[in-house]
Image 1: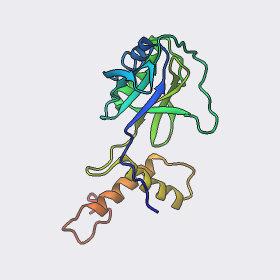
Image 2 (image 1 turned 180 degrees about the horizontal axis):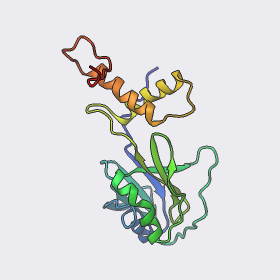
Image 3 (image 1 turned 30 degrees about the vertical axis):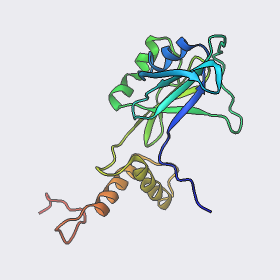
Image 4 (image 1 turned 180 degrees about the vertical axis):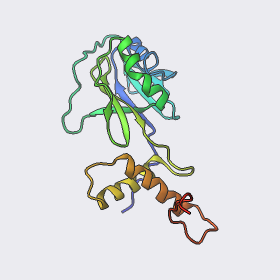
Length: 195
């Protein structure tokens, strides 16, 4: 038996209401360019809208002008989507509360997640959306996932409750130590001022 090895998210498709609600939310609020539209090839009564979230992947929405939505929270039963999270730069994240407030959009305020900060709010159809900003940049040639895996190992080893910034900093140092050679015989920390 062999795996079907994933190489990333190709796209996520949501069921929308009318076309303009989707355009106004995904492009008009979240800044995702509306890049492509065609009929839903499995249901001719629907249109299929494609939005670029910024990483070359796609968020797509099936729309139907006869469908209306409700802002009630979408189901959270097993098998249902709990929320979608989108990455923001730190600069944009620091403006997110103000920009949501100026539109009158209710939100959670900033939530401390240890390795990132988050803000939650509902889209016009009740889907929970998370705006997330990492508190770290991975070393060149590494990914956020690699840093988080290393930080998780440190957290467990230290019997800490959740990943915190100390775990991230130590994880980055460990990754750099393993991935980059040096001419030094001793790479231990030193105090160049204590002489």
